[in-house]
Amino acid sequence: MRHYLYIWHDPVARMIVASGLELKDVIPALQDADGIVLRKGGAGTATCQTVARQQLAALAHEDMYAWGSHAWADYRGAPPPSGDAEVAALLGHRGALTPLPALRGRFLAFAHDDGWYLKLLYAAWDDVAALLAGAIAPALGTLDMHALQRGGDGYWLQDGVVNLELTTHDIDSVLNRRL
Image (tube, helix red, strand yellow):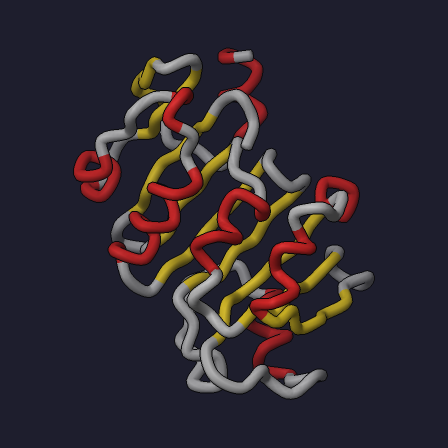
């Protein structure tokens, strides 16, 4: 995790937008999944792979920032077949979390420059609340999870202080003011 966290929640879209969270920060919350389907790269250069639960910890040592864009979705049960067009379409889509019976997952994430921008779609609030509880370092500050759940406000956490912030996908505008 970086030395700050910007986060906001859109409860209608079941979406969290954050800056300051890296994939390695959320790996502990994925340990009860059977693995993730991971897409590295952007349009035209993307490759998909299945990462079993036992291999997730190794991702924490990868230079994911260098990948640029990536997307992932967790799965339960048997991994989806490689080359599954439905899964590839899901990881390439940036809209709502569309349940895929083949995945039975809880999360769908799109990231750019790991830690800089994360859009996390979720199936149930309790899952994302547990993910955030384990991923947010106490030194950043104590986020009011009930206020975050209601949505409407963005939050900036740094050095133990939590401040209200605008809700935006324009992470650069927030970081330029705050850092």
